[in-house]
Amino acid sequence: MDAYNEKNDYLFHIYTLGRFEIYSKGVKITENSKRSIRVWNLFKYILSHKNKMLSAGELIDIIWGEDSCENPEKALQNLIYRLRNYLSLTVKADDLILFNQGCYKWNEKFPVWTDCDAMTEYIEKGKELMKSSPYDARQCFEKAIELYNGDFLSDIIYDIWVLPIRTTYKKKYSDCIALFLELLDKSGDFEAVIRVCNDFFKHEFLDEKSNLYFLRAMVSLNRKQEAQKHYDRMAEIMYRELGVNPSYLFADVLKQARETPLKTEMTNIDLEFINDILWKDERTSGAFQCDKDTFIAISKIMLRNLERSGLSIMMVLATFAESRLSDPDEKEKMLHIIEEARRKFVQAFRRGDIVCHWNPKQILIMLTNLTFEDAEIAMKRINKKIEDEILSERYVINYKIIPLEHEII
Image 1 (cartoon, rainbow, N blue to C red):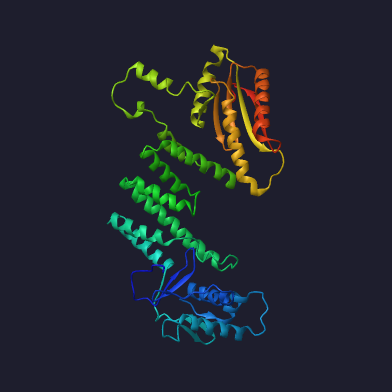
Image 2 (tube, one colour):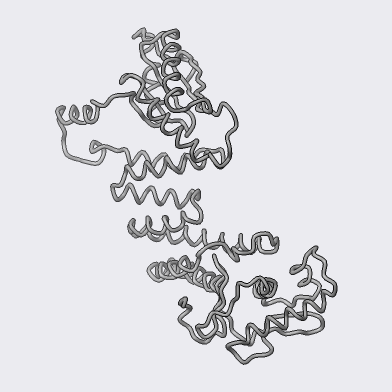
C-alpha cells in the first residue's frame, strides 16, 4: 500500500502529481477499468474546482465535449450517482457531492488531502522561513519536492482544461527548486545541490538556474571533468531542441573549472614548476582544443604578431550537416555519429593547430603556417577521411576558409 500523509483527519488522500490515486482509510478506491474512466474524469474536474459551484452544462461539456449523448442531463446524473457510490465504499457519507439549483459542488465538510495542495502549503511555509530559519525552510522545500512525481493529472492528455492547472503546479515546483538550491548553495551543501538537481533534471533538464547551481557544485567538489561533460550535454540538447546556445552566465563557472594551481595558491613558484604545468598532457596527438574565450584570446595575440612574424594563418569554420533529411527517430543516432566524427576530426589536425567547439555542430579551426591552397588541400583530405569512415552518405562536413586578417576580429 502506498504511504499517505501522516495526518489521519482526512477522509480521502488523493495523489494527482504524476499519477491519479485515491486512498480512504489506507484502501485504494480508484479503478482503471474502461467503464469507470468518465466517472473518474468527472471527479478530477470537480476536485480541481472543489471551491466552485459547477453547472450541469459545464460538466456535460467537460465530460462529453463534442461527443453525442442522447440525454446528457440524465447521463450526468448517472455518473454522479456512480461516483458517490465509489467514494462511499469505505465511508458512510451520501452527500460528498452537493447538488443545488442545477449546480454540483464538493462538500467542504469532508476534508480532502491532495498532494498538490500539500506541496503548495510546504512551498509557502518555506518562503516564510527563508530568512528567519533557513534550516526549517529547507525541510519544507524538501517535503514539497518529494511530493512532485510528475505533471498534474498526467493521465489526461487531450483535455484542454487541465493545461493551465498543470502549468501552474509545474511552475510552483520549479520555483521551489530554485529557492531550495539557493539555500543549499549558501550553506555549502554541494552534495545536496547535486542530488536535488539530478532529481529535477528528470522533469526539466534545460532550466538555466538549476544547471548553474549544478555546475558550481560540481566544480566546488572538484568534479570538474563531470561538470564539463554535463555542460557539453546540456549545450548539445539545448541547441538541438531550442536552436540556441547556453547563456554567457555559464562562462565564469566553466572558467573556474579550468583554473590551474597558479590562481589558487599564494606560495611562490619557480620556472621548473611553470615548465611542468606547460608540458602536462602536451605529448598527446591532435590539435590543441580550447573554449571560445581562449580561442578568441589566442586569435588576438596572433593578430598582434602578424605583421612582424610574417605568419600565414588560416581560419576554418567546419559545419556538420545532413546531406538529406533523416528520420526524426534517428536524431539520437545522428548526434552520436556527429560526436564521433568531431572527435576524429580534431585528432586529424596537427599539434600546432587550434580547435574550438563553437556549438554542437560547428568547429572553428586555426591553421598556422599554411597558405590558402595548402589549407584547402588539408581540409579536403581530412573531410574525405571522416566522411568515408564515419559519416557515410547521409552526413557531410561543409567548411569555409579565410585568412586571419586585422578586419576579422
